[in-house]
Picture 1 (cartoon, each protein chain N blue to C red):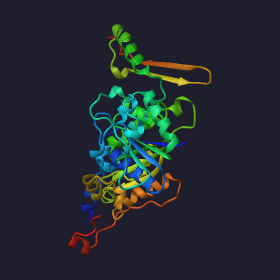
Picture 2: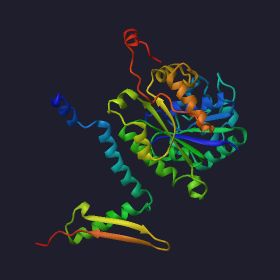
Picture 3: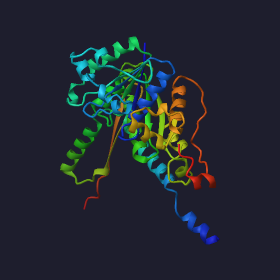
Picture 4: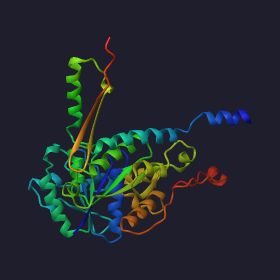
Length: 84
Length: 272
């Protein structure tokens, strides 16, 4: 009986896996929803420029736009590899 | 002034056309003067689901381009008074669908009808955007399945930014969630997203739940919107959905798993 319970508990129900995955992807989609249309392009071009000088990964660059009352702040975060 | 309702989803094959036909039929059965428009230029199907494919003479594009009047292009439903169908063009390319043309047609229809139901094509391209652009309300059709839920969220983003109401800073488009192809048995087994989860993820108001039903294919085979099949669970669920669209408070049905009795298993009953 114990063994049966153990085996049953082992496998996570597929619906709850689906829910977790969706919550993550939807949150990501929504964070991009309010940003201006040019943001993906801006991100790509900035990455290109940085890459001319330093070899960084796609995910080493993080760009976000925060809107405050009367101005917007463009925040750019680049993780540079340790120089050898 | 008519209320303009877009039936949309992003993903294809989730039941947009079935739902648009069923909802439009339901509204007309409730005495509302209704027209349902197919926006899927090049891939029209609403005419088949409504059972009027052999009566199509002119279409949406003909009207936009001034080759036919609205009254020539609209098809009167055979079964319900007060119900008209405006078919999409089958041959022309999609660019023929212009924003000004659509606006003109919707303005004209708004004067004569209580409800204009826009059946959106799949995707988020021009046709889908035009179908939703002038909407007052949106029915977002979603299957309990990851890709459909994600695409619905994309559509919700567009409804909040790429519609006339959003662009002109009016009250936002009223968003409703319609879950279709719901299988309580699979939900019960933990192999299908349940309706609470879908609502939680999309965080919009649930307007209806249509169970997975043999009646839907039967209805499309015959070209009779499933709303007419009042013996079926899906038909009844669409009637409930329409009542809620009209502002009535109707409890949810068909979302709980009922174990089949031995008798119905033996005799194969319970098919609806």
